[in-house]
Picture (cartoon, rainbow, N blue to C red):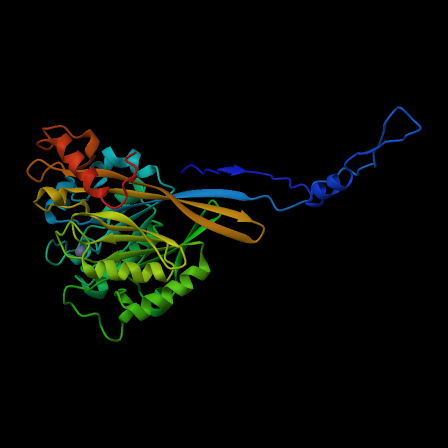
Length: 392
Ligand SMILES: [Zn+2]
């Protein structure tokens, strides 16, 4: 159970505004009396004003975290295979578990569908992953999974249905891929500390595997009219709208023009938080302020959280967090996003065996050559647009 932090409960007792005026009127006046040497002060009795009862502001906060792509190549699931033929990925998350437990709500992007062994496991280019990765994510502290990816259709409808059934079985909320139109039209929400989050997820495409025309609900695509309508509904359902986007160009360390355009669009529509995945490398986070002053926090790309890709930048990922502060006065509430953080992580393996996700701050040169320098470069990169980005 994660900590529930109630910032403060402040009672402000406002004195009636008449108070000052009343005092002015009853300022003791000197009334000199020529027949009397003594000067009397004539003081009008003043009523002591009672504090007027205004609603006390109630301030609560939630920290929302996100990690990037969970991309289960064959080398990863082979490493997770136990002598009895079952799979356990839990040990791969041991060293980041403390970090993953910190946010009140943690979102992960399950890039490879978890269709389970019954459908035959597979790797790139058409993935199918063991259900058990779900157990490991849940055990590690993940609270919500997004499923709109370019690999969502890899095992077609049966892969999606098997994955959905398993997430439901272990009690892991999810969005982005669905079993029916009614399922797609049900916006997922989560409430913590009196702050309600609405979650949406979309992908740029499905690697050329067509989404069946009669089942467009299977996976959410980035379609502006669809997103706009969903976002309008999501905003009515919750205090905070979170949109996960599988977008961008693989291996590019900066958002491209299309990401910038869509992010601005979503900011204009009042989305609060954008969680970006797909490029397999980190792209810096940023703030976007829209014309009405609303601020959107955009994590353009969180990189791979776990994969068996082969390049340095594909091994570096991490957890981004943002703290949401809700101030409620009477029936009016305001939301502030504060304290953006990033914790860089690294997928370590020895020749693709013994996979471990390790906080970069804990790496030594045996894990990664020039580990400290790589950490420094990563921090510098992620701070590019938010100079005061916090590294916890
Ligand atoms: Zn992808």
